Length: 247
Image 1 (cartoon, rainbow, N blue to C red):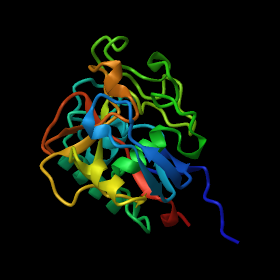
Image 2 (image 1 turned 180 degrees about the vertical axis):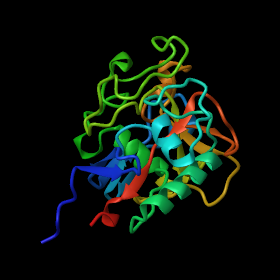
Image 3 (image 1 turned 90 degrees about the vertical axis):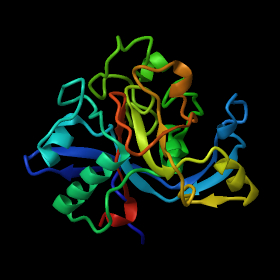
Image 4 (image 1 turned 30 degrees about the vertical axis):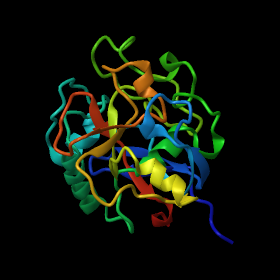
């Protein structure tokens, strides 16, 4: 009989603390938003993802500093998300973290499909516009309530899976290259299984919105992008590890 993965995976750190990753059961969902004004969110298409663990919170400054010994963030606070980190910076951190942990399969950034599936509540989705609610002020920090700065993680309500800060606070890097027409390609090919994004590109995908942005940018289906070298006080990231790596 196949063993059920634990709902929460605690990743230990050398300083005696740990960070939590939450299990997202694999499933199928309709990715995108047919009624969106933005072409790159259309068409809605069927996607299937395998189970994975994803960080309960975006990577905090404490976690970043425990691995790198540095803190590049503009808005300092150990429980605030780390920011001012590029996509390449995130990859460097992940490489150091994996070297320290030696898991069977590497921790990595989420794919865009994994990120959206998790933000929308996975198989427990309430089909909200934001991650856990149709009222952004309940679940996220954005231009109308942040007072122009990031906030410590976990102060707002989590979504259906127990994930916090997926709408607002900081944008989150995804693994994928960005292509405004990628959804059209996926739709034309039928069911997309664990899509990895375009094979090449100039920009990397960002998801989730941030403290400096409008409510519309914090929707679970909204797609943004930046050059992988780009750094900004409103950009951080979240970690993923495949569930089959946990034994």
